[in-house]
Image 1: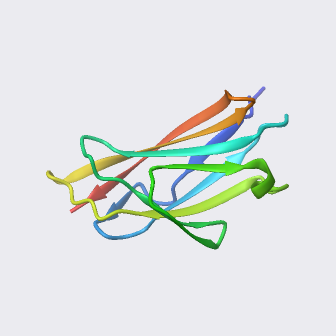
Image 2 (image 1 turned 120 degrees about the vertical axis):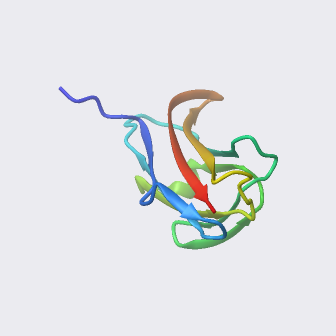
Length: 121
């Protein structure tokens, strides 16, 4: 029997060139109630950050690496699509960007997933 993940993150591309948008998709499979979904982003070995620009085809301007989405804002949808970007330039040939998505209920993490994408020169 296959276990259904409470939340998962997916990127259509494994790597992107400098200056291109990062497109991601979050699938919520958790059947219980929850308060919010949190997306954390980090460019490894760097102080640079990402800016979230779109959430479910709605333009947002969120210049921080941690985006909290309340259940009231999510509604009944089970898929969240986001776009983020950065001005980061890798020191070597590429840099890893880590995204961690979590479902939160009453200040406790219920489920999480981690995804990576590379920024290449």
